[in-house]
Length: 462
Image 1 (spheres, rainbow, N blue to C red):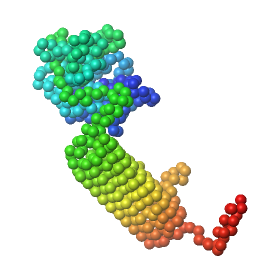
Image 2: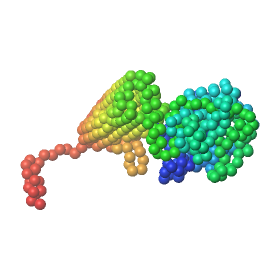
Image 3: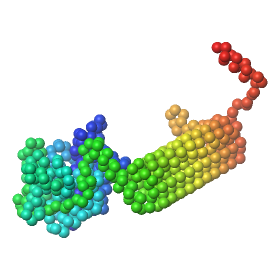
Image 4: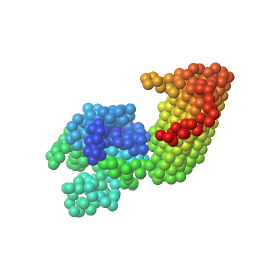
């Protein structure tokens, strides 16, 4: 059986109050992933035959987010949910199968909920199944009115509900499963005969009932999943729920998270058993941590591959590859595709950009390593700088194995320090250093006996 998915992602999101007019509502992120990508992620285990994303306001941004997982269909005029689904008619009209329609701003929906909804629809041989939820405070939601057989008779919006109907606690979540052929047969009959002049997808329910089709409901157990994001307050609420959901799953898999309320881990992050994540840590993007790592406190890691048994403290790491048994931080900044081998020490106030450190390298403190390769067991002294930029171009520094670079040295790229070479502290190097050579590049020290008193006298006389 063919299963089709239609994601409604064309809304403007006026209440998000974004200054960027290209910023679609569904492109707002939670823990590094956009709202609409969460919906696509929930759909993935269902393996839809085809998935369509309806884009409109901010459509270019939304397209970039969904185009690898869905066919993009434009709704150039914002004329309601029914009108949005009509845009898919050229692709799905007349086809046999089952179609699930859901909103792109509902990031908390789970794959389990969507699978259960589809199963109920198929097993009960419904032509339309509405995902509903029973809540204590239904004000503002469309109420589900059932007939004597327990099937859905209609959905009544808050403004149109009688006092009796307002007491109904079962509400519409905005997620539907349709017989695809029947859906598109009825969509052509939608009318904009309402105050907004829009075409509502909910009007199809009445059409199905008038035709004698079966309209059922599947009740969502957890009302939090139906939360749609319309403003920044709801975005914050959803972030908190998602954060705790992700952290709970990780803890149940064998990861220690010392303070789940103050730890932010993205949905695509993988962390191995016996790792410890300390408070104030953010791990986002496509990041993988191996086993028995200690990360944090106050550490930020994004799009990075990390091996086993590393200790990373109060550091920022983006787009890097880190091996095993390393000590990183505190106050280390690694960025721009750095590669760290095994058993290295990258320490306090060290910044590295596009650098490659082989096994056993030590850069303990107050150092900048940019566009640089450093061989095994080399020591980079305190305050060393690789001067890689001449104002227009970036240049590479190559440092071999077992090299000792003394404190306060400046290496002006492009430059090569061969294996086993030694750089005297305070040197500024502009030419290559050969294997086993000692490089000294500083003025000879001269002490003027008693002259400090003369200088102090001049200063004090001013």
